[in-house]
Image (tube, rainbow, N blue to C red; front, side):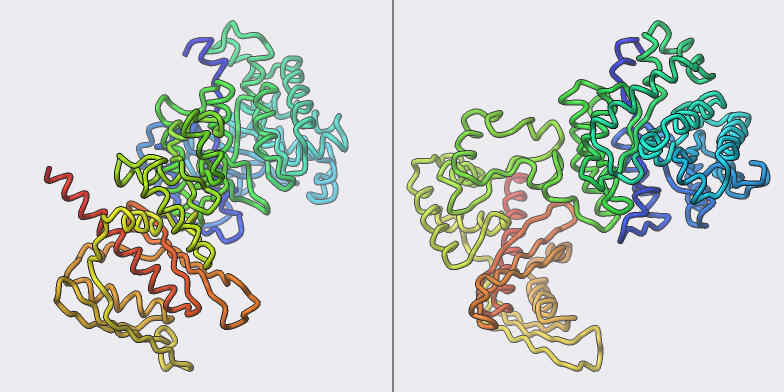
Length: 560
């Protein structure tokens, strides 16, 4: 690696499987952890902190299986604490468990805040230093790369700067390969991060230490001392004050070259710094290399994959990778984007593998409608009569409570109807839904019956469900399976109900949004009615027709 490349490189350290697993509602199985590891390796992060083997058998089982993994980019780390008071590292079972993980690197956390030393650990300040020094020395003698997490560093540095820096000096002299400054409580602001990082870089230049000297004699030979010291400094931020991303970027701008976080941002309390927001900013805005060449365009896809494994959704408004990151609603914005893309977008969405979206609403304007309609008919322009017809229809429907900005599939069907490019693939002749409470079987409290017609052929089917919509969905799929077996791959991934106007109480109209997926694509449809079952039926029909139309068009293109 050249001197220039090294100067612009930042190590990315993902702790989804350790700190992320401490987030509320997150529970990884061993297989989940293996799947997340694969995704992070595909992205190209430098380090994966995969768990604390001394805390639970599941993490130890993961490390046992992970020895056989053939990772292409990332290296695994095991996480644990300095030795307990009154024992040697060799006698501490948690310390020994880190060796049993058999990872190249060990992440060791120790106390930097004198409050935690005396009031939480209840040891003397001198004993805490001994715990840090002896445990690091133990692992270095075992040939491990040692990443030292200075827990609560910024709070400790604020309260007692001399002691906080002394803990880092102790770790550095004992041979730590990285000094990671942790904003564990997540309350720091960027100015504190900036000052803290710079002071630690100065400390490393003054003290040196084995890792610093080795670095200066190795690939970094010839770098300025400040730049070399920066490669030993890392940052680990939590988001309790909403500053985790800003603090992490500020740390890098101040000289740190190692950034810790979780890809999606979930973690303890308000979460960790979200790497999916930090990495693009460092690479695109500041010119740092965080991932291997060509990996950044996969960050949206792989962030969604990790979220899916964790059974959470990527926040829609998440920078760069969220579904709203490049969504435009106002007519002026849409018109500007279509003329000069950078007028309302700070980066090209393709750089991070995301898509530009034009949200359809009464404030959207004809430019956005025409742009969306071009996907169906490339000849459509802003002045095309269909554009005006769709705009008028959109405003009329939204006045009745319909909303299409989050229901792209239903909007596409609306455009197809106006273009005359829509032919119903089936019709529901009749349907009946019955709920029963209390039910003999708690899992099937509703049943549905449906009669459909496809090209003049009638099919009748029934199904039970854990609610009326679930039963109707099951009956409709069963009736259509004979004609469209590909619907067997489709499932509902989300279902939302919104009361449009509460003044009508139980007679109010409701808006139902249904998100569907076939395992490869996801689409959303909408239905509106004073009858929640009818609103659901409308959205279900749109979801099925959207899927079938797209399958037919794909087969036709493949045939051509």
